[in-house]
Length: 300
Ligand code: ADP
Image (tube, rainbow, N blue to C red; front, side, top):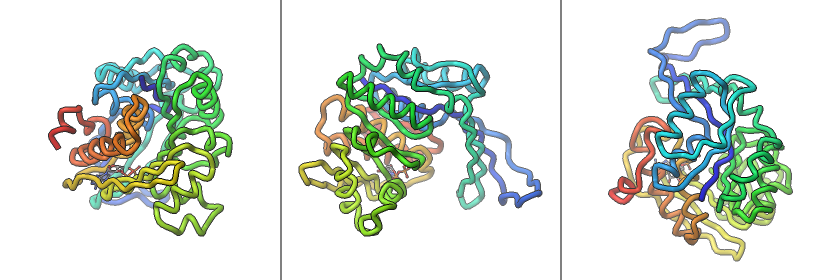
């Protein structure tokens, strides 16, 4: 039902007392290695909820690539679209200080080698999908190709423009659903300061004017806003939870939303489900390992 086209990274995490300055060395904790990357996260989030999910991505022929593939398969993700080789698996080098703040260096590695040709070669997977979900941790021309191919095949297109990058107007216009957090909304509206300084409702309205059929703005602990082209904008609060780690919450939200909305739920209904998934994910440490099953979401 859902095909995620995106990144797969190994997250290499070290806790430090403080970040090193230029030329300095600090000692940190033991290294923790976790499967991550926005594409891989979204696929795991949807599959754990019970969605028939596939991933189109590229990893290296190395231990990190095998970790990512194993995790996807263990969650039931169809990995026929995961290509292997061309560069080392993408990694995120993450240091966390005692206040919980992150510093992150990403080496895209194999993610940067996922090409438009790879998308064209996956025509069968694209044609079978009801909904295709994309982010921006792979080359923009690959995203553009996937948006075009998915649209032609009749699949709904969901885009989370993260990390923010200059997006061709025709890619934005071709999206059925744009999912942004506050930071991404302001970035996309950087040429429209009046809208960017307004409310989430104003961001959604200004973004809808650029062509996507629907827009969802995530608002952290406050939940999300769902807006459609007919002018309706509804705020959906998040359940109140004790947040311990918000890493990957947006990916859990978007994976869940893309699945339910692609399966035919009303947008507001799908967002109501997705905020519960996001809220559950923040109550547990980590990204993929914090993602709930459908039963856990129902129990929240
Ligand atoms: P991102 O992680 O991309 O910045 P948000 O912070 O907006 O995105 O979070 C995405 C979703 O995760 C929210 O819409 C909400 O459902 C859930 N979420 C995030 N933080 C919290 C929190 N502190 N309490 C409850 N839900 C949260």
